Image (cartoon, rainbow, N blue to C red; front, side):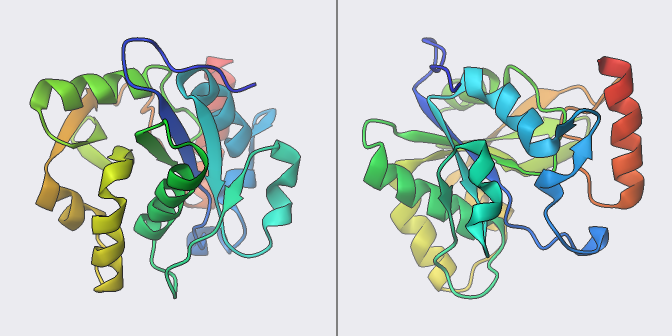
Length: 211
């Protein structure tokens, strides 16, 4: 079950973005791909539940395909496929309606099987140390703008940006200021993401090593 957030950082709700088109995988839901004994989504839930005050899935289309996970599922309400920012906005709007005491949301993509167990804590630490309103993850030299912290207070600004046609996460976060939390990319990149069948095979090998 979903646990409570650590006392050291503000209560934070988790959002798993499962609304991508998965073109390079031939379509379908990357989050529902099985890596080892569990789907990527099950792995994300297991890792994030102890870190978050609650969890939420963002997806589009027939939402019943996620019903077995027992989590709320929200769809984009920005017309067209507006990418991850639309899913993030949907999550922030859901929080504003349903969990008003929570001021922070963590987002992660639904194609990362090996997320770190200190994700929420580390992102908040970097955000607070920097004095910036946003934070995202970096492993090695790669920045992961979708793995980030979002204050519910910025949802109005985000909606305006999306309605004006903005789609690039780093353009919007850069306009506010974003802190970077660093993780090593070796021996396993915690933000390894499955985009292709080759990635899925590599994830299977990694999962066999870390079990």
